[in-house]
Amino acid sequence: MALSKEPYRGTRDFFPVDKRIRDYLFSVMEKTALSFGYESYDGPILEEVELYKAKSGEELINDQIYSFVDRGERFVAIRPEMTPTLARMVAKVHREIQKPIRWFSIPNLMRYEKPQRGRVREHWQLNVDIFGASPSHSALEILQVVITLFKNFGANESHFEILINDRNIVDAVFNQLLQTSAEQNYRLYKIIDKSKKLTPEALEKLINEVQLSEQAKILFKEYLNMSSFDEVQTFLKTHRLESSLQEFSTFLELAKSCHITPFLKYDPTIVRGLDYYTGVVFEVFDKHPDNRRALSGGGAYAHLLKIFNEESVPGVGFGLGDVTLRDFLETHKLLPNFDVASNDIALVMNDPNSFVALNQLASSLRSNGFKVIQTLDCLNFKKMFPFAEKKGALFIGFMGGDEVNQQTIQIKNLGTKEQTSFQLNDLEKIVNHLKNK
Image (cartoon, rainbow, N blue to C red; front, side, top):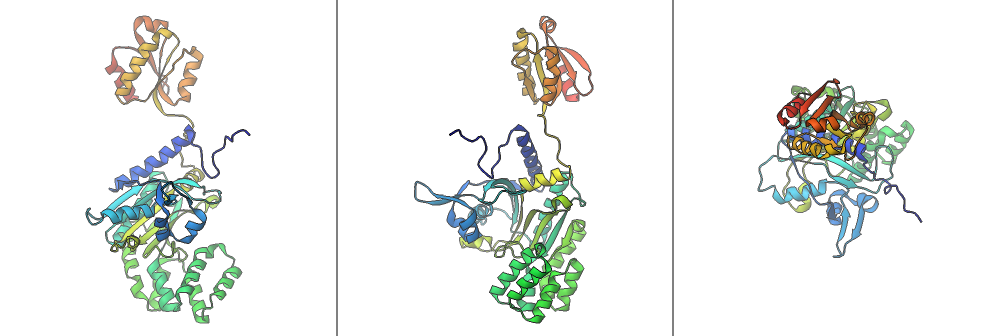
């Protein structure tokens, strides 16, 4: 039986055009994180399964991880997420290094999921986290990183919005207002998380199954129907839950002062991980009707290091996958054209005696920081320019018999069509010409 030429289901081959796109996404991610003073980190692609059990729970372990027993009888998994590795690394060093800790990474991750639009089994994800600073200030900075990142890709508030909530508010509504049990809370969280996808009848049915009092049902529905920061503040003050508003109000004031509120919208259905997040939570949503989905998510957490019996160190972070990001950029026509490679100059010949001279020039130009592609065989004149254009060259330098005899090279700017002759040994003039484009 012949071997399949297709990659494993849910993974992707990155041919040069796709790799150019991925490199572009990564470069903007890295540039943005570095501009805020975040430092790059990485970890192993394999971790012991116990690490994921401690942080992520049974659903991930039972249904989504790629796991196996290695030759040393250790139960390990290909990393499905980066946060447990991050927690392990921070737990190891947080007492010795200066805070706040600002770290970012772009790891590849694998989960056994059903491949569909925006979701594959192997993907890359930008993770940005800050530890050990004021939760309100940290949440503000993380959202500024998010907004700046999308702006750096050419997006603005017409393209995306950030739906935001606070787990302190949700917990206060459940525990103090509805006075529900832990089991009821868990079921209500699940209902909230999927409420937007349910019909009114289906939502009503699920709420009834939780066996709330009639008054609690009314209040829960009132909570679900809120859609602005003013509404949630009024709701909490009316029901004397102002204490749960304190940190969120501080954050909102900061967000207003720093001019990011045009991107923010209150949404009571944003709750994120049930046992993980402890403060502000958010999801970035695409506004385009053809791609109306979550692009990124994150929030504040306080107890991440407790799985290592370490003290609580407050943190805020977010993750953004390469698949959903590319879909977003393509949907809004914000992705540059990467159909061709990018080179500064193509050096071509139609006389084999020019090969060595061109090769020496190519080496000199590369030493000066230029991207140079050289033909290894002779081309006739008609094929020279198509070759250079397909390689994305800004200039073409060519030599024939006359140039070999005169030790010259013809260099043409493919944009302006200006052509200039240079002596091969006059490297400084050639370099300056290429730099001035």
